[in-house]
Length: 334
Ligand code: G3H
Ligand code: 13P
Ligand code: ZN
Image 1 (spheres, rainbow, N blue to C red):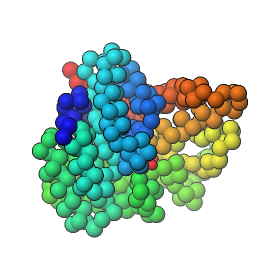
Image 2: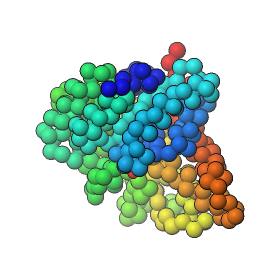
Image 3: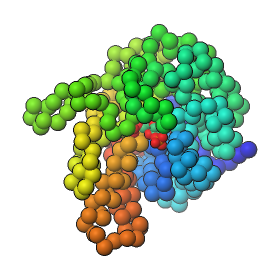
Image 4: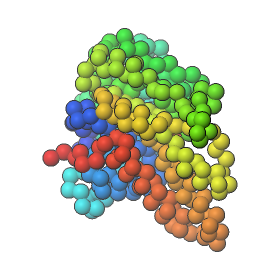
């Protein structure tokens, strides 16, 4: 049993309290590789931002759970080496799909876990969420639960349709589960294809697809029911068009990839939304830089040659999100 406090990590409680009060959101960036981890830490240190580094079940399968745990411990040491005396780094399980997986992560040093029972019947979701919360709180680990269904791929759970969170259920759900934060569905979705072209309109000037707006009315209803309660948005990549264009220009094929406009995420950050999940934008930034580099340097075969610009491009994206979208720059405690 490893306690996250011994690894220099923090849970989400204090940072969420400050974020809700301050009208900004904490970035939750997924990571699978060393380059992503380095870029996240560099961006967080340079902007003086708290940060959530999150690991999905797929990431655990890809990189190995133990390695990712040591990478997070290394991230704290790396942040200090870069000059941040008191980094606020959370190691979070993203989309935990069972009590056993959540327990395993808590036991190996995670400071926060998500139990995602959103695809289950309501009472079943409450039952397992409660079980995770009871276990986690013994170790002061914070727990995110989810109500409402996002369209798209949630780790290994795929959903064709989304169901907005029902505001009339959130008080009962939060009270009976005891969760520390609540992920809701208001129209975001996972992956780089968040909307089908037929769900969008077209900007007459540029011809680009314009996605349907997020359901801010649902968000505001939820905020009214649970004043000050930390709300989480999944599926919040904006799928930057320039990265998609670069990928397509250098041999990729991502037709009609589309994300959540950043101005809507900025607006959400000012509300009780205090954690915004971004994974796909990192994948796009990495892939775009690698494709471009290899196309321009066909003689390169040392991974460091193409992973270095990939890391730089991800760092640029992370800094942009922190400073221009979420507003968590300069928000470290003290
Ligand atoms: O919400 C899902 C995350 O983007 C993680 O994706 O399961 O492919 O690692 P993954
Ligand atoms: P994106 O696919 O929009 O980056 O969402 C990531 C996410 O919600 C991770 O839990
Ligand atoms: Zn998610």
